[in-house]
Figure 1 (cartoon, rainbow, N blue to C red):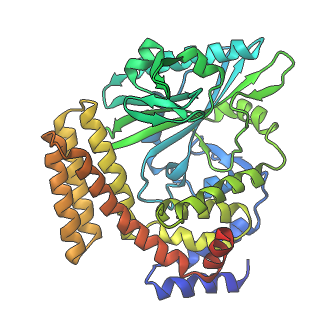
Figure 2: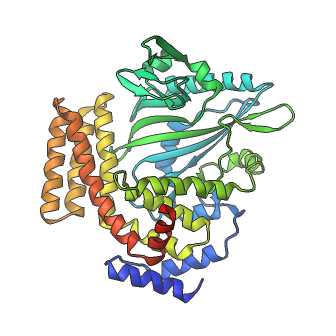
Figure 3: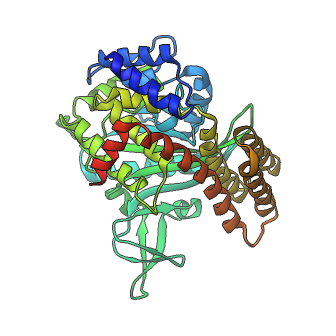
Length: 430
């Protein structure tokens, strides 16, 4: 780490009025310079573990909350058959720097010990369905959807086009019936069963709406499940065809270290290259005109830079995450949570509280005509959601778009103002 790195950060930040904690930035740069890519450590005080890069960004302040929601999200183990390791991912795992997280994201490694791959897939189908039904509804949470399998052909489902290979999203009723019905392009009725979907699971995810036990504020909680089959000879086979690397997770229970270690030994040697390639594809998507989401782009840029040695660029982005305008990223997520919570029959008092919090967050983060416009949209959203306005979907989309426009403008201006980041994005686009 050179003094030039810190000077470049301070210069760009000062030009845009971004506050920088100089001492903290210097400590982070020094730590990153000494980091090895295979560094994994346990935080003895909190009991969490993960790659040292991830732990530098994690704050244990909300750990009790995340562990409580994790009890809902985690697919249970079965001794001798199903092993698991649950982790925080996304902004929840970077809570030291991302003070306005969008959602409550988990990542779970599930290893199934079975004689054949077909047996492992059948066990996967069983444990996922059991878990969805067990967490369909409870104090402070409601099941929203599951993602399992992919459509075998192009078709139409509930009036909407689906493409062959696209993921199948399951409602609670469909999980209970163990089948999703759709029509092929010739109008013939088709279906995919839960067991068929588990044979080639693809991207596996379960979503809930959850309420914080103290604040009662709502959030979308998701658990992305990375499934491996352990064959009788000890070989680990990822059922989705790819064993995910471990550079972005904070694992919640040190007792799951044996499974983590077993999986980590099998992560490909070029895992960082694959990881960054995937992130760069998403950065291209989120910075492309007409599809811009500069908040998501910033998060992916940070993860690319911190893992590829571009520490000055990463340190600069760290400083962007806790500015007041980023509150609107959380506002956009909370709008979706309020809308889905009402549809899932959460109590109206909780939904009221959520919208009040949205208005307060906008007032605190914004000023002038922009504040007036966004608050007006949020107040209209209250009526649309709670009174089942016929234009509800349009008003929800408009309120989300207004919040994300603010986030887009904020991150785009500040990312492009850092010369090295602008050059990187130009190269990526080319």
